[in-house]
Length: 248
Length: 84
Image 1 (spheres, one colour):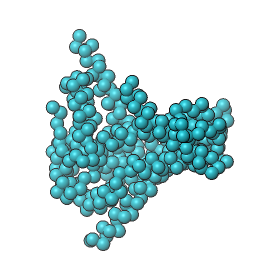
Image 2 (cartoon, rainbow over the protein chains, first blue to last red):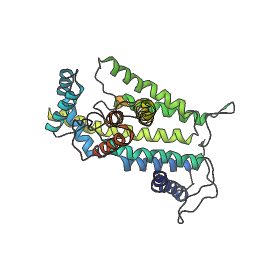
Image 3 (cartoon, rainbow over the protein chains, first blue to last red):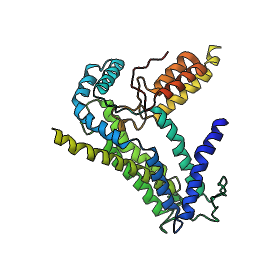
Image 4 (cartoon, each protein chain N blue to C red):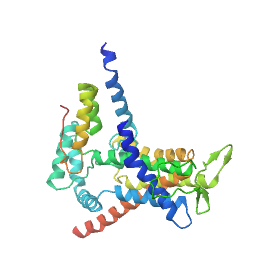
């Protein structure tokens, strides 16, 4: 109960108020643009330090052969393998590993974001607004007059094409992200290859499948959040590679 | 008797396993996006929590798991961190 109240007051309510606040002040009062802006804002706040990721990425490109050696050498004992790799990172003063605590903190934020989109698009009576945030009499579900974000791609025997397009787009950017982030080196380990296949093909298909069953605002969120991850990764890779060539 | 007493712990283990099969960046569907791994320590937080639950039961094991996640923060140094 206590955790529920904490979630509602610290995460969900501020996000809902921010969403309605954006909707009130944006010219044209477009809920689609609000979803895009809010998603980018939250991703920026949750983004890890770009500088640190950059430094790690550069150093890792150099260390790749050594890491592969260690993997091969200790392939029968995961614990000594982990130890040896950690020592190598320490020696080179880098660490490609993330940490679980920040992830567990941002998970509820993303869930709350999703919830606020559902509330805003469902045209429910909105409760929990702060006194200084005016309650809009009506929230138009249209995104630049083109897509009704509250509609599902397939409803009552009819296809709604704009929502279908957003759903397919969600799968396409997801595929782009997987292709970009997966390591290019040919992996000979069959389980690792199967996992990579799964991320490259199954996840995008899964995104499309889920997207087609949800109001179009949520695939829109998925497209924006995935594009953000792609842009972030692209920035890190493009900054890391040319510098590496100079050093050699 | 033993079977009934271990129900709480086994439910908790099942939840962690479900997390590992889906959202976990170290074991789940997005695993290949993190070629170097995600969790800072060895074994990963979820694996550590699972084994701690199995060994010490729901209350004590859950407590060990929570402490471990607190240790897995951006300021911590990576280490091999066995289950107590």
